[in-house]
Structure formats: structure tokens, C-alpha cells
Image (cartoon, rainbow, N blue to C red; front, side, top):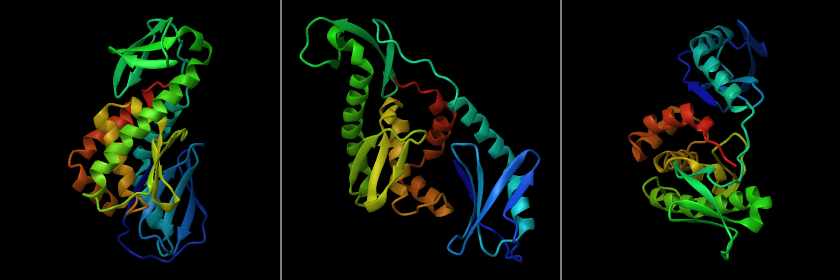
Amino acid sequence: MKTSHQPADCTPISAETSIELDDLQFEIRRSAKRRTMEITVERTGELILSAPLQVGIDKLREFVTEKRFWVYTKLAQKDRLQRQVPRKEFVAGEGFLFLGRTHRLKLVEAQEAPLKLMNGRFALHHDAQAGARDHFIRWYSERARIWLSGRVADYQSRMEVEPAGVKVQDLGYRWGSCGKGDWLYFHWKTILLPARIAEYVVVHEIAHLHEPHHTPAFWQRVERAMPDYLQRKDWLAEHGIDVEGV
């Protein structure tokens, strides 16, 4: 979770390595390559303030003060994300998401695959019930790889990139990431999101092939490919943490 800003002036550099604001403490990390100030909220709740070498401490304090509400909002969302979410029960009638729609589970006596989605319901072979979670993750992962690869193919030419490919795995708290060698990584849970929201995750990660940071240029690339991206981004920020997996 990040927010960034282009500094307006170049005041003398300070040797301070942290900033405190009320009950918030930011670790300052400077880089000669950086052109903007950016706040990152780490998984652990640690606050990182990245900045160009030349930006002075007063400007940094002004920036964190301006972004204070955003930081509190992200910390609150993280608290919700880390709450204990009840595990799904693999019993008849339990609901499981797929591309934003809930499908009820039924247990069946005879089918060739352990898990299928047919006629609007998930069908789980009764002999596979003990390992149902693993079967669901494998099923979701394979469908995610196929569906997300299709969306990447749809957008890569218009966004002028050639990703090496798509990999689907458990990414913890992240929906996606852009890895070495121009590989795009997505969490298998992305396939649980509504299609238009999962599509935003795809465009977001493709844009990172051009711009590694959330700079104004990055968001301009996203908007050119997806003019209504902000609505989708806001939906993901508000509702994504409530998407239940298995």
C-alpha cells in the first residue's frame, strides 16, 4: 500500500532517519534515483517514507501530515485484513466465489474429477472431502492462470508490453506483482473477484512493466488502458479484504 508525491522544492538534506507524527512513526529511506516522496505501509504495519536525497526534513514532515488520513485508513484496512476469518466448511450448501458470484457446494457420489463447477454449483466427490481445500486451491489456480492469461493477452498490445508470462500462486496480502524477467504474478484468489475488478489487477500489474513505482506516469498508463480504473481501484480497496477464500 503506497502513496506518492512529486516534491516541489529542494531544501537541504537532513541526517534524520525517522519522523514521528502523533502515534505514527515513519522510517526515512532516501535514494539518489528517486524523484518522488512515497509512503509504504508494510504488512507488519511499519511505515516507510521513501524520498529523494535533496528533500529536507520540513518538506517530509509536511508530506506525512498531508497523508496522515490516508495512512490511518490503510492501517485500519490492514487490521481488518489480519482479523481471524472463519475457514470454509466443505459441506453441502456452503458458498464459494468464482469471478464475483457465489456457487453452492454439493457432494456427489460419482464423477471423474474431485471437483467441478457445473450447472451453477460446485460438485465435490465425497471421497475428496477430506482434501477439499487443496482441491479448491488447485481448481482456482488453474482457472485463474487461464483467465488471467487471456486478459493479459487482451491488454499487452495496447499497453505496449510483452510479458514473459503469467504465474499464479499464493502472494499473501498482495493481489499481484511484477517479477524479474517481466513475469506477472497473481494471487490465486484474484479469480474470486468480480471480473471487472480482476481485470483492473491485470492492468495494474502490466503498467508496472513500464513504471515500477506508483508515480503519476504509472497512473496515467493505467488510465489510458482503463479509463474507469479509479472506480475499480476504490472497490478493491474497500471490498477486496472481505473476499473469502477457502
